Image (cartoon, rainbow, N blue to C red; front, side, top):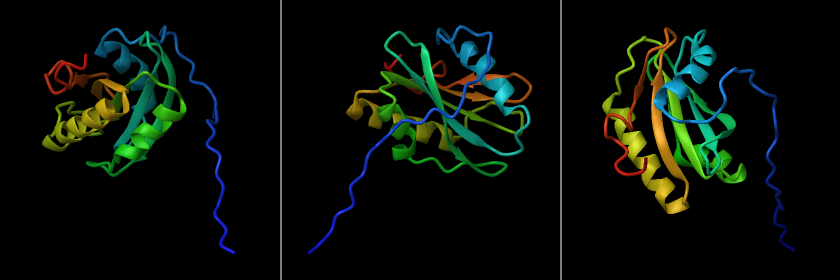
Length: 151
């Protein structure tokens, strides 16, 4: 007899993040102010996804990947897994640049476009992709026109 594994998908709360910010994403600055304290001590790139409800309130945060000084390998399924399990209506992509240069690379733009296309198929909008630095600077790929009409 052949046996097939049976799985159950669960969302596990790993704690909370204390913030004075009201957790509603109104503009890229909101995301940068929330994320800067989380990246200020990092010596390598890391990629997060902020989970949003239908009113753009942050309902969760997930670290998708931690990379090297100048790169971070991000796969679509790892970005959308917490969004699906967390019942997110939309997401904001966030990553840091330890170089303190917030400008988007060609790879950042290509990844953003791929993730946006996947979100369209899944019905989960990508509101923005914000690059933050430890000194508080940031860059919004939505403001730079890389997300089309998803905003």
